[in-house]
Length: 319
Length: 319
Image 1 (cartoon, rainbow over the protein chains, first blue to last red):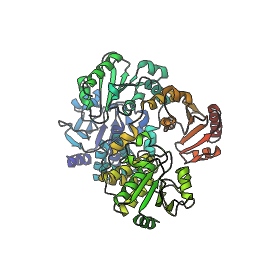
Image 2: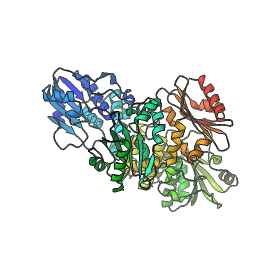
Image 3: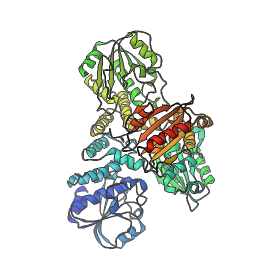
Image 4: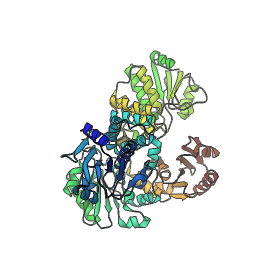
């Protein structure tokens, strides 16, 4: 369906580019890279995301062009990137789709789909990030010769491979990274902004959260909490603990880790991680959640201690 | 001098391979990669390092072949890797060099030297790690077709580029990474072992150390401490705080960070880091230390608070 997407891009005049809420570096990097490229073709482009840009993505080139307000006008095409479900973009967007605000829906993604997402889909489950798929598209359109776009695509690549650590880091990923650097991408610029722009409250919260670190199941399972009391003590919001789940997992001998975050509605958001063998998406499913083998999550409507007890008991049968 | 090193390797029968004390991934990865390759040529090889293997490098292929005891016998060649000064290998090694225990000394390194190090040197300051220089050597000797060696060299590369973040991450680095993966290197195996095998005491220590985090000089300077009291409270040794200096630097707006570690002799070991403009090696030199622009250090024989005061005052004139 690559050629159909290319045809559509050449033919269309007005484009809305969208991605999932709670956006990450792949969602926003892909949105911006595609949007900037289409603007070079003199297309009328709006880039939309329901949520504000997270603090560590505010460095992205041309990030100020993103809007959190869904426009009311009609568009030739809405392009969903890194997301295949209108309701995961926003309720407003799903309503606009149903109301026929877009002539056609395109979808560009690297997540495996079990059904069609848009009128035309370009899905490449072998790509390490949606940004890689966008890069291939832009090369076909000869729109890839830009330092800004190279940095945006590089950001999607480093975020989705865990800075070239995860098992999706293939020789092809490294060859693409070399190509992006030759086009002007700057690894230190991207890494410094992604990882070295933490609010000081993040570490104040980490200091409190680390005190709750527990090794269980003979040291194969480690858990850590972020409670409302901790958040209030340092004046932090929940988003600052987004990757704390990596700390308990990174202990020697630990196979599975869980981060329990008490949300302001009292429910517990659980982030599960595994190192090698355990499929934590199965565990998450038992509690109404989902995810991947090594990273999954669920929301548990109960007290913190009760949520911890249930996850530990469920894990004890697996480890 | 590449051809002379190759000649020497072909001619010699007995080799001692050594690197600097307090070894890192480049020192041990380079030692092992070269040692394993020479053993394939049926050479008599001893791989020596003064210090025990750090916890996060114990996964290195064939790491058990390293010895901390300097052999007494004569060798045709001693090969210093990632180090150009016998005294930085060990007092025993420097004494053995002076006593003529080695027919000739070779040196393979990627640090710029201001004078000759061995009888024959192969120095490539453009290489991201000493392992990259070793890899080029092994390719010339056709000894690079081994998964173990690919993982060892990959480890040197990821350690010395900060997992492909630092400014030494060039297109050539990514092309080499692709080549190593094609030879069997496994990014998740290396990353998981390097970064996800922390003793739990490391995070208990981090929780205490983070409480000392201070933002100074209008938020451009952040400092953090590791005191003997903290070490005793969690039963940890000083080595567990080796990369804590990265935490204060990674705060938004911080240009320079310092980690102050109280050693068991009462002296203060200072690790300095900078993000962009400031050359912390100059600062370190003022206090008898040294290093690179973005990472340097010194040892200050005084009380913790006094060391902190002096560094802050010296910095106030720079920021």
